[in-house]
Image (cartoon, rainbow, N blue to C red):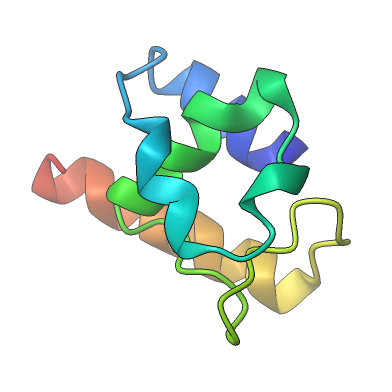
Length: 81
């Protein structure tokens, strides 16, 4: 979650609709400070969740997940999403 918030700030605090996160069973566990960042990342295709309808906002991000998030972030910047 902190990583997503950092990317969101770096991207210039783009607007996002936090209601888009209702697709995740654990959306209520997302900290208030990270809500817009997580919604932006989901809406931009940077994150898609961990499967089984969860985003695991309190979980630890693995190296592989970090690499995928960064790849998706860079790709979204190239395509202008």
